[in-house]
Length: 94
Image 1 (cartoon, helix red, strand yellow):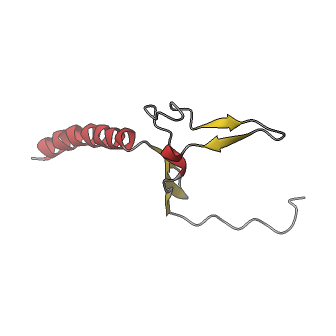
Image 2 (cartoon, one colour; image 1 turned 135 degrees about the vertical axis):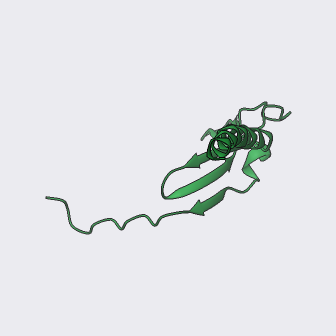
């Protein structure tokens, strides 16, 4: 019975990872995780007719700057806090 459970878990974990990767790719999201947070951020769509996957375009003028495309900039970033970040010390270390 124990070997059967182990084999079942060994098969489920890669399947769950592949399913999560496919969902992130289909939703055009990027995953970042560390011990303090999990963050899902939107990425530019390669099939976007405006930016063609670049995420924006340069606006010319006296101060050239990049204008973000709406295919990713109008979408929310999702964050889950896990552990609090320790406070920064007030005094120098030496």
